[in-house]
Length: 152
Image (tube, rainbow, N blue to C red; front, side, top):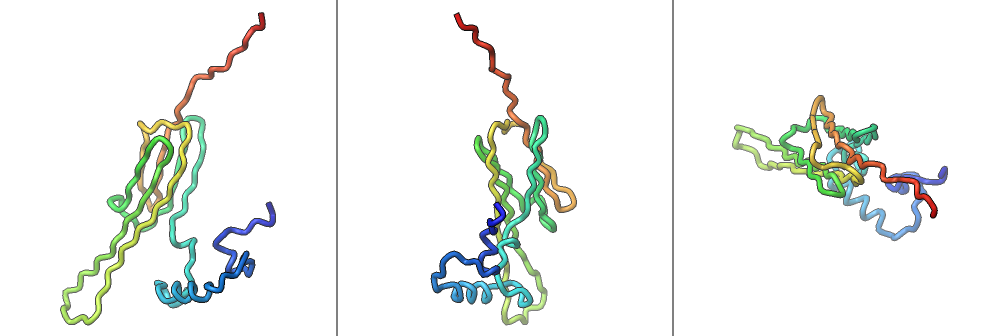
């Protein structure tokens, strides 16, 4: 296990598996479309939000770090096998001055999908407080069907 390197650190650490010859091209595109001139290279750690999943006796607690996100910008969808958290943000700049020669708007969307196994989708609770989205997913508690079989 000590030899594992996260996939998004392969290029930065010089441990790329196989050179395709397009790395400079992709880096140039990422640099061109980057948000900040101080950090020109694309960072996959910034492209999504962090989540923690805690298993408790009767439920799971999922916490997502979403600083600056309003609850109207968050969608939570659940089905029998997964829970999906999606954040849709749009930046609207309202300037009263009509003399601008260039104006841009930004829209971004990111999501995380969590596989659920053995949970009840009925009583899920969610709360957003201080930039942390907390989702409580109750476990589907089944009776223990194990029993001893006597041999005749």
